[in-house]
Amino acid sequence: MAVRVLDSAPVSGFRPSATVLFHSVAKAYGRAVVAVMLTGMGEDGVAGLRDIDDLGGHIIAQDEATSVVFGMPAAAIAEGLTDEVLPLEGIAARLGELL
Image 1 (cartoon, rainbow, N blue to C red):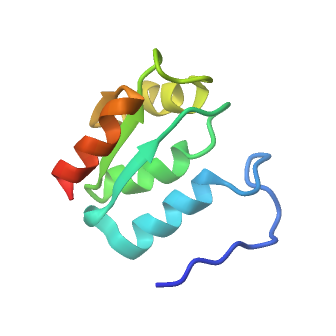
Image 2 (tube, helix red, strand yellow; image 1 turned 135 degrees about the vertical axis):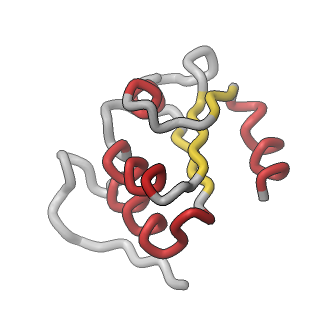
């Protein structure tokens, strides 16, 4: 698998776009995906996380207490897309357990 950065139009105002990233990994890996939504502004990524969720992937969001900007994780949580909400310092260990 190769990763390419496209010079296409912004998606919902973002380039690079977490939505495009999550759409791509959902398409490539389906239910095998473990996605992490970290601190960030706005709702970028939520539409792509929906694809991951629909295919049975696992989604972790960073908690509010350890986020500098809680926008992106909050949007994922509000949409009911997250399987877990963890503090930043707990995410790496959890990924190790899942993988």
